[in-house]
Image 1 (cartoon, rainbow, N blue to C red):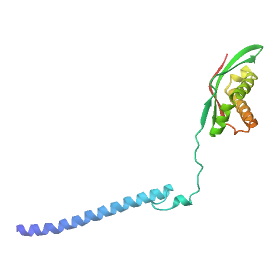
Image 2 (tube, helix red, strand yellow):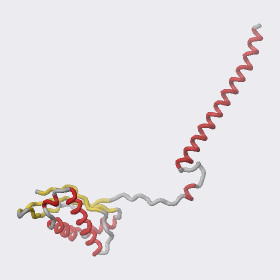
Image 3 (cartoon, rainbow, N blue to C red):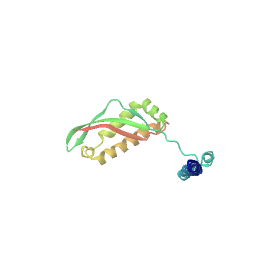
Length: 166
């Protein structure tokens, strides 16, 4: 009787082993298909496909570089018959390093022109954010005009690092 139970248990183990192998194969196949489907939906394509050659080339990101005008721009501004002072620390930004090199080369002329733009501003204008944005735009146009006269590329922006009016 002991032999009968031993021989009945062996076929049951083989059936379980086949079931485990079948489930493992199905799971591996499902995981592989989900990874391939995810890659395809995200646009990366399937591994080994030549989707890189058929995709149009995107423009590469070029980070901005900055040049600080070391000394602050200090001048007087008119305010209701009184003289007030304005002190502005300025930086120039550009994606073209040649533009920043040209700005450094012509810094005395640029600095002089920026002081003139600042001194022509009204005190009450400089108190508002809109007035400061307008001043930054005027300064950008002035710097780009100087660089254009010298035959150099334009900068992208004028940034205020510190802005004091009193």
